Length: 257
Length: 260
Image 1 (cartoon, helix red, strand yellow):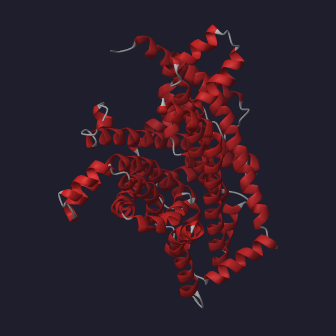
Image 2: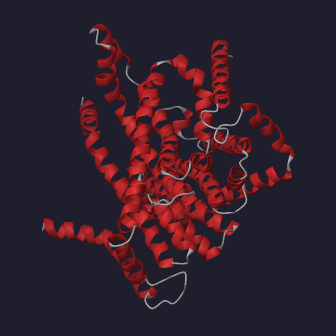
Image 3: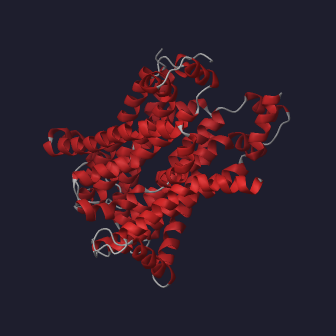
C-alpha cells in the first residue's frame, strides 16, 4: 500500500525546494524583505499556535468565510432551483446572473466600507455577495437538467409542492449544487482574506498586512503558509462531505447510469 | 415571422434588466443620500472621467497588467503542465507541494509582492501571473495525462520528433482541458488585479475606486465599481466567444465520434 519510491521522491523534492529557498534567501538577490530565511519562517510557524492573537485571527477568518458561505447557500440554492424550474424566470434573469457571476465583487469593497465601515459585517456581506453566484448558477443548471423520465413520473404521479422540491428537484440538482458549493468555499476564504488585507478588519489577511508594514517578512510568509493550510484543509473536508452526501449518486458509486 | 420570434426572444431576456435599471434611475433621481447618488449622476461622472478624466488610461493600465500576467501564467503553466503531465514519476514527486501551493488564497501574497517590490506595474504583473498559473498548470496536467496512449504510440511508430509530437499531438489533444483552466485563471486574474490596485498603486481602476471612496466622491466610486463589473462581464463573454471558436474542431470531432 505504502509506496516507498514515491515517498522518497517527494521528500527529495521537498529538500530540494528548501535548499533552493535557503540559497536564494542567503544570496539576498531578492532582498530579505521578499524572501526571509526558511528557519526564521519555521520558528515563527511553531510559535504562532501559542499566541492568542493567532487563534483569534484564524477564528475571525473562518467565521466570516463559513457564515458567508452558509448564508449564500440558504439564499442561492432555493432561488436557483426556482429560477431553473421556470423557463420564463430563467430567461428574464439570465443576463443579470451572467453579469454578476463575472463581476469582481472585491471592487465593491470601497463602497461597502463607506456604507458599513471596516467591520465584520462588511466582510460578511462581501463574502455572501461573492459566494452566492457559483451556488446560484449551479443550482439553476441542476434544476434545468431533469431527465425526461423523472419529469414524466412526477407529472403522472401528481407529485408537487414540498414533496417535489425535497424528493425530486433537490436530489436531482444536488451534484451540481455540490460543485457550486465547492467553488464558493474557495471563494469565501479568498474574499475573507482579501477584505482583511485591504481594510483593517481583523483576521489572517490583516495579520499578513500588518506584518508586511512592520517589515516582518518571516511572519508574512508564516501566515501565508497558514492560509494555504486553511485552504487545503477546507478543500479536503469538502471533498469528504461531497463523497458522503452524494454516496448514493452513480458518479460516486462508480457505476454508469 | 422569424424576426418577430427573435424580437420576442430578446424581449424575454431584456425586460427585467431594463426594468431594474429604470427603477434604479427613477428611485435614485433627486436622491440626496451621500451613499446612493442618483444613477444619472453616476453615469455622467463616469462618462466625464472616461472622456476627459483619467479613467481610460487607468483602464489601460489595469488591462495591460492583466494581459501580461495572464500571458506569463499561460506560457509557464502550459510548459510545466506538459512536462508534468507526461511523467507519472515527476507528478507523484511534486503533487503534495502543488496541492498545497494552489490552496493558498491568491490574494494573501499581494502584500508581500507589492510591499517588497513597490507599487509599479511589474509587481502587479507578478502577483497576477502567480495567481493565474495554478489553474492553467493543473488543467494542463490533467489534459496531458488523459491523452489516449494510441496518440503516443502513433508518434513513436511514425518516429515523429519530440517537437512535432508536443506541438501537433499533445497540445491539441489537451486543449479542451487547458482552455477551461485559462477561463478560471482569467476570473482569478481580474480579482487579483483589483486587489493589487487597491492595496498599493498610483494608477488603475482599483486605485480610482479606492481614492474616490476615500475622498467621499461616492458617484465616482460607484462609477468605477460598475465599470470594473462591466469589464469583468465583457472579458468573460469575449473569452466564451474565443472558446467557442478555439474548440470548434473538438466539438465537431467528438460529435462525429458519437455518431460513429
